[in-house]
Image 1: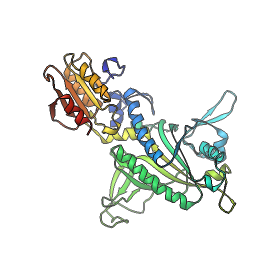
Image 2: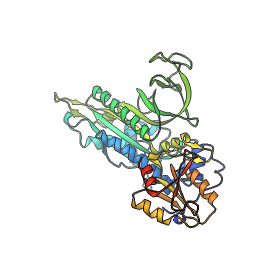
Image 3: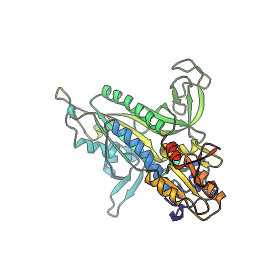
Image 4: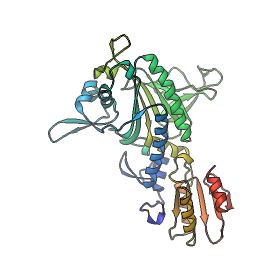
Length: 407
């Protein structure tokens, strides 16, 4: 993309109401614009990042054997009343039509995936069933804050699994946990698995995937010597400074963290509510065990910005960066290199605008693409190569640039 033909512009100053790093930088760098509290438009750069995060999640869900669907955002109130959530959920957006019918805007999809599965599940041979989708969700937050970390409208991946018994669910959960940790590693994040209450979804213990960040809203205790981690807002059994109850090798440390994913053991709550039964091997009708597994796509984008930035702007991990390289052309240079990069399947953002060099460099740092290339009268037949995380630059020929980009 050429910046001269893009409608997106960067901003010198952050919005006055922006309190968090992700809100300030994503707006200034031209990734999002806020329509109202908790609701954002994702501009071309921002949409590319969301799509890259979604694709990584999609690849790992597919690798587990899950099937992708796309479920509705508007649900009949009757489904939510059947499960009791119509009255119990205080964040559910409720909509009344001209014909006085009540509807709910999806805050989750248990109320739609269960009757959907009922159409296809009949015997134990049909299990396990794994269904996921990536779609928008709505929550009637009283005070939406923290930029895209907590919105009233947000993009999520939801996976739902159906199992013949608890043993089969427990086995799948272990696989899902590993898939989640792989996803966050691919996104450049280190996530800790914490125990928490099941909330409105389940009376059982749930598991949250938390990333340590000062912008986080969860108080956790964690161990540096093993994987032990617990959300202290829900479980107050342990305190900072005590020995790790899992490995006893280190003292528990406290930290703020941001939830990027979660897992709930739903038991038979929803299969019973919708009378979803299958015949087991003995020919007896039983209610399958359900699990749900969420990853906040927009929330993860915000967490990445909170984790990877400096005083100049965003520093995107390579895997989710909107472009592979940011090509800065000075003195009218760069068109030839831009075309050659595209011919070699390099996704490139080309700053061909007729503005001062200093502004171009500042925007490159703000936007945060991993590699900056500069072409000018001074570089001659070479290209200045600089990584966003480094202060050093090198003059390279085109083939050497391609070689570095392939690493």
